Image (cartoon, rainbow, N blue to C red; front, side, top):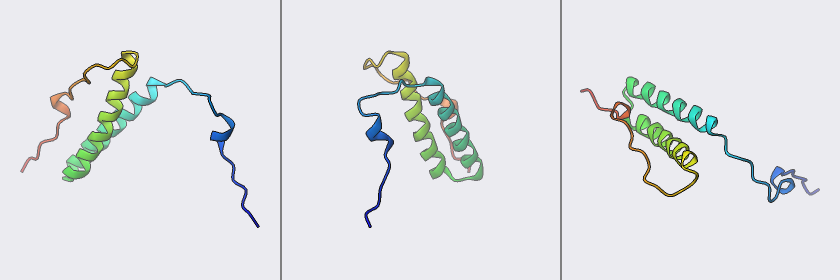
Length: 86
């Protein structure tokens, strides 16, 4: 018997939902906190991974603030960089 699948995408074809910058801000903060927690545990690989995710949302917020125009992304502030203490 064939399966029936439901897809929301097929129902909203052509409809683009507006971006919500508060989600990008919240996700950015979440990934920075996750990176900090991993760094404190000593897992710098996982921390760097989370920082890369945070950087994605930072760029999203930057693009949203500049109306999608191509411009250089903001630099990550030094306090966000992780340094190995040992």
